[in-house]
Length: 490
Image 1 (cartoon, rainbow, N blue to C red):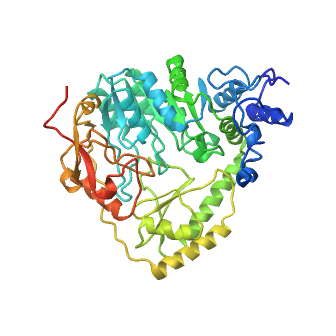
Image 2: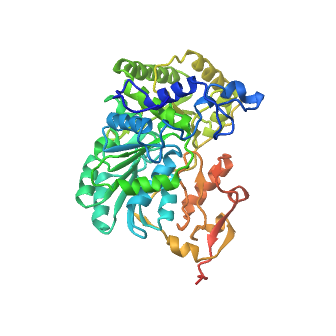
Image 3: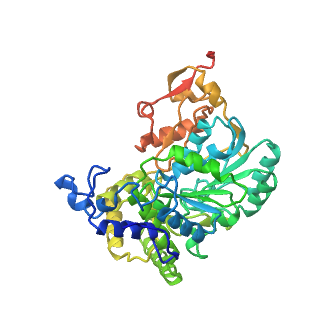
């Protein structure tokens, strides 16, 4: 049976998932990849977990369309995505928001050109800058004085930076950030567009914002040109499932599609794509009553947390900053974030991340009952009260309020030799590697950046807290790779 796209679809449909379901119901005989043959060839140890999923883990068969040239059910599913988010064009991503960030930057910014970039962006943004050999000007975010956490860039400052760097081709922002903080950039985006800049936004943590006016404003509604979202972070999509939205008619769509085709797998996962179809279906059909019940559940949960002695819920006091209600920062007085997280995990409660003296909780986009989890949190707090060691924060974020440049360009980095030094000896030198605490995946030190005393102090603090550094084995040994500035290659 041919799976076609002849029918008109509505937001009540999930055309890709429904087509895969129809296809698998025919009990097709597989003489094609993948090797599990619709689940018939699979180890017994895992069969029970995978048996329902494998029949829709197929390949580009007749009628099942092709992500890299969609004309049927995948095209239909992405049209529904476009219609819900009210964009010019929208795409499924099977390699995460990382591939969307890479594609939008590499497709739209000319090799070697100058761009304005929010400094607390995800590592994938900086990887894109390097791959495109761009000349980044890093815009520092405002740091909340009570939380010591970034809350986005100041729009008026950013407008001034656009004036100061008239050669910039794009402005690249992250909103909301990892902690759920966002600002209204409508004024900034209007100015940037008039100045001829592309407005590129990593909205990884905000795919759910279009679900309701009771949630913060999406960058799509602020007027961004291209927005990338991690559907898997807050919507019911499989890990690595993301969306890329083109929100303007002045974007060269062909360039974006070329890079998506180059950077994404040539064998895209149908289960991931089907979950993206279902995630759109879910967010498009969630009701106002369900959103209201969800928000009420979260508020009740927060009130119950506040009633536990020594528990504090952290938030910003600045009213211009919007906070994602799905993100809650919780601390236990006198307890480090890593220890709090460890004790919670001993009671089978797994948080998103641990900061210096807090943990981040991510709530579902759904009404929920908190009774069982509250009992476990209470037990964890009782455990901490009896056994924890007192902890006093020793660090306060200090960040320049002026844009920064790389001390060594990407091209020069390739021509310069390196050597290892101790962390204390690295102050003032230029980093030859990027230092990334994970999560959240925001680099503390960028390759090519000059290393400050404050940064070294913070790194040492994180080492003492047993924080994980991604893609870096030197830090655990108290050393860092720096450039030999007395030598340049040819």
